[in-house]
Amino acid sequence: MPDSHKGRFNPAFATVTTLFFMWGFVTASIDPLVPSVRAVFSLTYAESMLTQFAFFLAYGVISIPAAWVLEKSGYARTILLALGAMLLGCLLMPVATHFAAYGFVLIALFVIAAGITQLQVAANPLAALLGPPQGSHFRLTLSQTFNSLGTVIAPFLGSYLILRGGVFEGAVSTASRSATLRNVDTQFIAIAIILVLLGLFLWRQRRLLHVPHERDDAKASPFAAFASRWALFGGLAIFLYVGAEVSIGSVMINFLHQPGILNASFEHAGRLLSFYWGGAMVGRAVGSAVLTRIPANRALAVAACVALLLCLLITQSGGVLASALGGLAAGAVAGFAALAIGLFNSIMFPTIFTLTLERSSAPTPATSGLLCMAIVGGAVLPVITGYTADHAGLTTAFFVPLISYVCIAIFALASSRSAPRIETAPVSA
Image 1: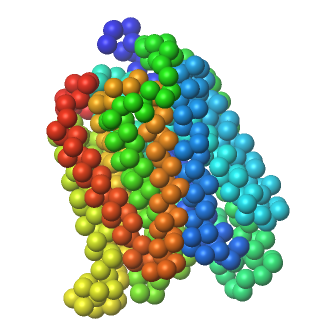
Image 2: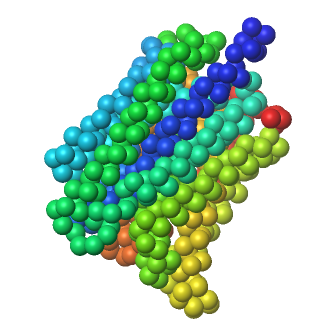
Image 3: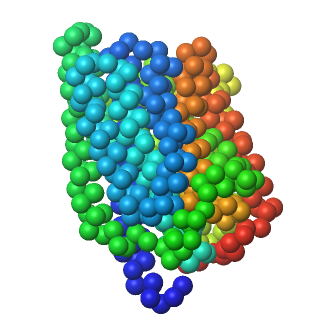
């Protein structure tokens, strides 16, 4: 890297990392919303999962256009446009709750997610590119650590703002529904204020958000990644990972609330959800150091294998595990096993992302667009998980993420047999 670029990469990387925190915070704010809308609108598990469907559907719809915008407008303008879309979605939420219409809530979530999609298409590759190629795994995993910090704080605040009072205390009535919807307003208005402040900060720092080969990428087609076998394979892995992570986070509060698991109140279960996302934060902090010592594909394989074993343990909480430990103990083990999955989810997204970027034959913006489009797994798998929960129970529903982790382990093993186009090596932090 030329000396002229060295001085700005540290502040540029720090600037981009603030974005990871913000979209993690907003994304995890949806988890406490799931039991809230389920109670307010008297929904089934599958119907309440439409909140996640509407949110993550945006990745499937917006990612390819977002890649085109990135190629034509560059990183800085794309990021500012993304923050504007997120702000608009947050301001639509009070309108939706005013009319007490679930459909309007879903539209507001889609708009918020459209902005986050645009943000991810730009910020993920930018974090990987702001420095030498051999440090890409470390940089993206470190940025994702701050993303996880946002996902830890959001459920804790959300459980306080949304999962208290209203329909969660006393009989469900018009007044209690109205109180719960006002709590939802409070959270999203607060997010809107933070987005305004972040947008002003990014506007002042916009000259830092540039990489040397950005103009060359503007000539590429946003559909080029569909011709790359590794871009498609990485997209499938991202689809399954995000779907599994979101599915678990979405059912966690209701899962821990069950008398046979932890019998926690909704508010307490919402706070416990922070440990699920907190595990991801700790894992990414540790993982960013681990990835300077061992190959990313090996770390990914280990994480996926442990996650699938934890899911398997949960599915046996009413059978083999209950026979061995007794019902109450088995339920407690299953509850803590579900929370522990977050620790092993931690490095999956950044390692899948960078392993794919290294091996894809398509330009970086096109590959990033396809990988972000694959985040639509967060829309599809939670609905399948919710349907499974409705018909077979929340414990059985953990078979859906279990199968996903099996496939991710296969991706990790396959990547170890394929040499990257961009040579990487362990690099100290």
